[in-house]
Image 1 (cartoon, rainbow, N blue to C red):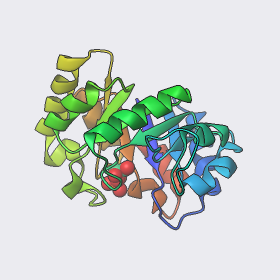
Image 2: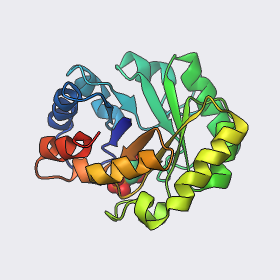
Image 3: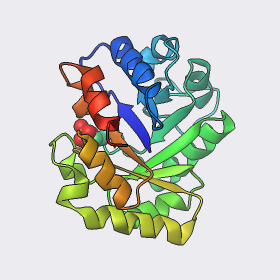
Length: 214
Ligand SMILES: O=C[C@H](O)COP(=O)(O)O
């Protein structure tokens, strides 16, 4: 299972969480990575943890003030990027452009989507993976695998119907090892989570509990 920890803009210590992710990654067969804010990418990557960006824009070098250039994200140490997170939504054409920008910079891609219908569209854009996240469950602590398991199974079917090479992650409310196991049983190859680790008093303990049953 791929466990991608998104730090969003939570007021956690990104380096401390990155070190926790790095260390717990050494103890498990699961693949763990962390997605800090853009301003923290370099410091996080220096810990040796697998580092992802939270977003890249559909742009190339040039006149693009305030945008996230895929090449700069990669130079800062990111090896992958989220695209179209529910909190950073893009138009379809811009999702496509961001996927192409990420691929130009050799970044792995996870395109997020709200529901299985959008997952089908996202899977058609050539990303490495897609992540289904019902927005209403984000940050609730109620896992999508429990509250709406059909969403995960339907997303897996939708992605497979378009491109069997695209793996499917699920996210929203995932905070325990049981949640990760349930996601896997529904066909997801990974989970995207945030508050369960970024807001935990002890991120290492939270991560250990997440991967313990895997
Ligand atoms: O990127 C992560 C997702 O939005 C899930 O967030 P959450 O784990 O706080 O529900």
